[in-house]
Image (cartoon, rainbow, N blue to C red; front, side):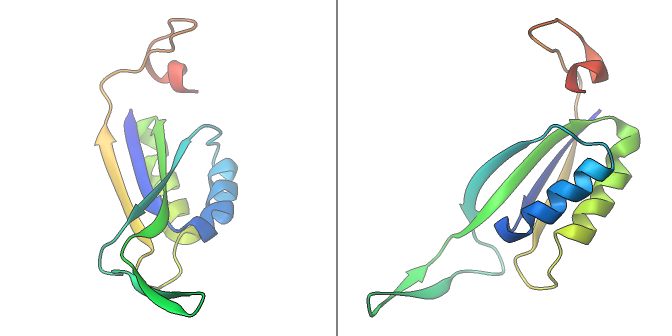
Length: 113
């Protein structure tokens, strides 16, 4: 099994969610986060006053999946999360040693389906 973490722009989430559903991913965790990278921040304007926004809003998607689904999910993320601009995000893939569903005590990939 693998854990995929993807940092994406909030405005592309709908397309990403639809793409993931088409490849059979029904469960994922989503966190609202803020960060900066090459995109840095930008200057905002509120009631006539300029201010610096150093950290921009992003979404972090996390999912645990079988190894054979990794390529399909990465393809969806690369296609649907891309705007072509700096700040589109990142994808991280980690090995997962074990998963256990607490309610039923199921172990392995069946526990994350």
